[in-house]
Image (cartoon, rainbow, N blue to C red):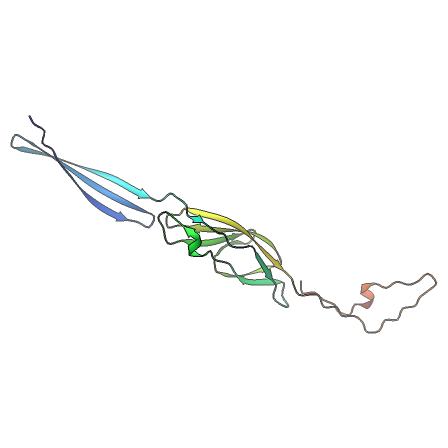
Length: 178
């Protein structure tokens, strides 16, 4: 007998945030002597993104001065420009920053840090959960000079061996915010 197969398929496409699933239903028809043999089979196809985004340029290191009368730097965390991030599939990204001994923050978030040096890691995630990272540092420093307040009159007697004076003897409430 001659083999006259008729083959066709139909796709059901399911789009998910991080992948696309295709349920392909195959149908095979084989006419044999006035009888039509019919077979169907389902095939599951999954298309997913497993490639991390690329950060072309990380944020610059940050130097933050403390606010007057406080030993705290108050500032907004940086955000990497969309033009500096590329990906093979995604156009939407989440941006987070992990600061050592502080925790995870959102890019662009306003935060307050005490004086010190902090290692930071910028994390960009695509819609499939693939991540790219780059590192930068945050330096929070006190730029406000101390205020020296001295006693107006100090009497010191000198002996034959000379004399000495300490800071505590003339200090009248000097202070430094940090």
